[in-house]
Picture (cartoon, rainbow, N blue to C red):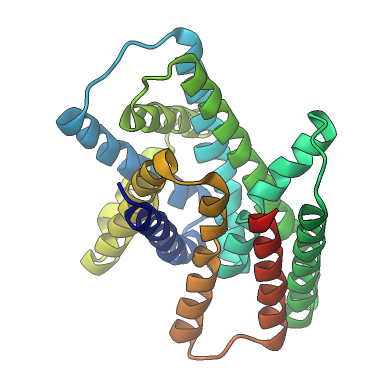
Length: 294
């Protein structure tokens, strides 16, 4: 597989997730973040199960490896995404995806404090740019709403941290069972998330199912399509790219998500981005560039 094909898949994964995130934001506001997350995980489980049955096979794994994947789904796909979708509903998809793109920096900070991995000058400047970007977003929210909206920014970062924790658990499972198939991994993670939803509210899926059935056909199509694009398609493309791509370059490509959503939001709302938002994106892009060349 040549580099053009690999990075085309990576860009496709980012565009699929970022476009779906606008629909996630809409339904999270219409219902709530847990409702949207439950629908997303249920449809993802169905799609990954069909893919596993038709294109792959189930392999034997240890209880330790399975437990790590179940916990990964519970922490990232269940609890983490509830907080992330809450931020989608309050802050909008574009701003939340910018914050979500800080995850590599959060992992870098973790490595600095707990693994003794030092930052280069470029990485340090990237952190400064990202911090300025966050402050501009908060200042913009203060001008729009009269509040710094710290609670919703906190939900976003909590979701990002839990998602990163889920990724680390999944990586640990891969190390224990190197021949794990991607579709099997995601099936087990989705099951872990659904167990989490049932523990939170055992009867919640009954209400969610009734709500989905009652939706107009257009809304059902949009909802199901976004769940398939934002989970099954994006994860399948991203993991396929990850197998062959240079990791640093792959990380830098994730800037396409927030930029794409900013364009879509401007078209949808028929207004140009504010000067503060453009300034925040400038610092964001600078920080990502510095991180990519570090």
